[in-house]
Length: 187
Image 1: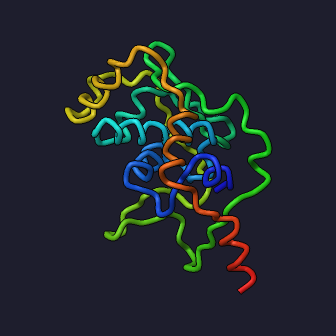
Image 2: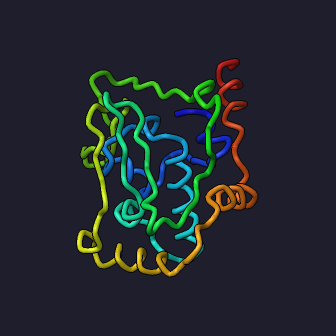
């Protein structure tokens, strides 16, 4: 994963169930999801938690269409204009590819993060077939997902994604992962 996920977007490891659910549903590795899409994911989780709602992958994806590039590289989440509730974190993430956090898999032959029961969470590396979502309908949502969506649709204005993430960062300071990685290399 790129360092901006930790330094700007407050992504925490291990990833929570909601985040893993979104990655699994989209069939992408964490690094394959564009940083602005990560910002939407983080802000959605923070917004739901502040409203005492359970964030779920399908409630989140209701507000977005996916735009996988061909050949498969990044997966971008595109706000559905008529119902989007979060604005873009940044018009342009510049130089985000300059620093990254590398995960090394010591067990050969493993291609996915796995649940305790051995089922797949999401892939370690980029996939050639990310999921495509476009104009998900309310009829495709569970009762719990509909409740979350209906409450969020009551907001009439777009909420500031960057503001939600920054306020959360003030309450939950970012761990200096770059410093920790440097220390581990020196030890």
